[in-house]
Image (tube, rainbow, N blue to C red; front, side, top):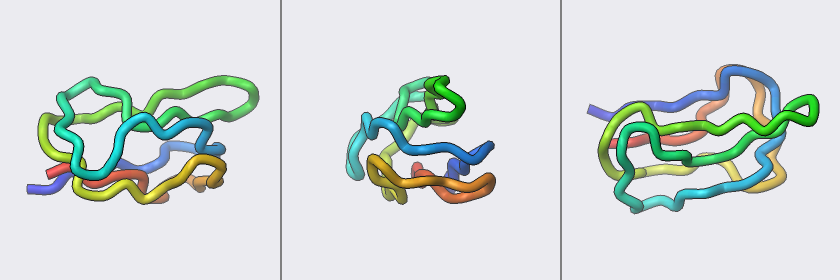
Length: 71
């Protein structure tokens, strides 16, 4: 079953740490968002393979936007 990771707030994608196809573990950082001069890590909520990374560095995400899919 695929896990979708979505943005919890409006933010800029400051840094992309993982790539599609990477094996990730629960707690691994996938992306770092920046909002109001704070860095917010987006972490994997499960073990699996990162099937899709839906953002790039410099993108602006809105609350609820898809960031990644892990299977």
